[in-house]
Image (cartoon, rainbow, N blue to C red):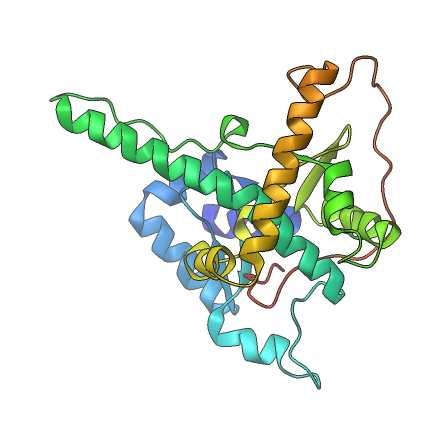
Length: 255
């Protein structure tokens, strides 16, 4: 006898993430009874579903009640279950702040604007939350290296950590552009972390990085960069970096 919830959990564990539009996943997200069953079975194994209505993917992570047993048994609290160094974790926070935070702000602004329009129309259509590439602006890799290499162990180390984050599914690198990966939007609890980043010690660093990215885009446009962010004739593929993997102490631990 087929068990769709068991199959879905097995797929989440094997593939590490699934697109929100996956047929089985979409059915669980809109059916309260199926969602309760999924949450109950995951909780029995010390896991929880990582999903956000603004995120394009879903994954599973360690449940809050089990975090101490998973991360607190060593001499120091483990930042993640992916064995990453502090510089890789710091880079992950920076990438989340540069990619996910502005994306979320655009998503919320768009939703609020559409909601205001719907209130003026008696039979307005319910539109899905925008989660695609149209609300995500990639990062220029050269600009990131220029802004953060001295803070995160040098260019060589930063390149290694970018490769590690790419292999773990946090980012995608294409033609010297860094795009959001399937797990980046799920790595942090937005409601808990966004204000800490925007109002805390990182705020000035992130603002300077955004200004640097904007200046780099303007220079690129003047030099003839095409709509995809590539220089004409630039067909060289990315170099994949060495090893390592990543998350932060506030990360919703991925399995």
